Image (cartoon, rainbow over all chains, first blue to last red; front, top):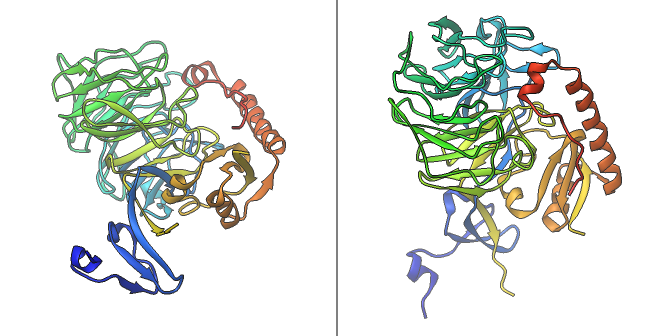
Length: 335
Length: 94
């Protein structure tokens, strides 16, 4: 008769406490405290609660960049008005950074961020206040401790798409008013923006999800109307993907790459909780967010780990963390 | 009964885990109202987060009140804001 040791090469361990599920996938052990045999199994991707922001941030699109465990959130709206405060996340809790780390511009909401890292980020465009012109071309670059104004975009963009890093970014689409959208793409080289000839998006829209690099970017969803469209950018031109979202949406957030991404939330309902995963050729519905979430900030370098932060009510200062797969320790039952 | 209801304050990291999400239905709403799958894992979660049990009608009333506050806020905003975001609607808890 085959034995566990014969198959695995080692005996069943007796442990007083469970090992971490991530480190013990496929293993069987005996928990001598609970008198259970246990295994670690791989499950479907899911959202979990992340640390709460110190500040409630609504209209938080473009406030976040970095990774799930090393994130920056700056700008957005609060009950007291637009905030310039920057917060830093370590995967567990958010810390308000001191005032030299505040955004420098008058005010920002509904802006756009490139991917970036916790020590090198970029935000651009957005709504500079509560009165016209409602749209700005301002750009600020983050070095890990302070924001510095750098070259302005050639055109104002609000509720636009952001790709790349602080040294090689792209801004696409969005609104130039109201009224009116732009389909134009501009690229940033670390100091100045240039309009890309022939780089117009196929779809005139705003409030879509965007992520990826300056030479391999993706946008999905968008307004008006709650679009299902997906477009891909190669650093020079946009092409419309045959892949369409299962549920149209606006004010949605995404992260990952142009071949492996996650798009979460958006409006109107029922999109507000629905999450879709992109594999480079098709979208698949995956686990819902726990809150109806739209106009949040988002960050994450891959489709296996990301974070959504803030957003319009009822979200407030809450964040959610996506992981795929999810590893869980389970009791073995024989009955 | 498929779902049960409670109020609980989201304390951040660990309040609900990936394992929770794969073990029972969970949905967060305005007013710290939670709709929780009515199974052993869901009931255990309510105890873990010190949730206060609510009957559905009471949970719905809390959510409705918060949504009506959001509607008042929305109606006071300018046209530019209203063009960017939808008006919050009342809805029925699952």
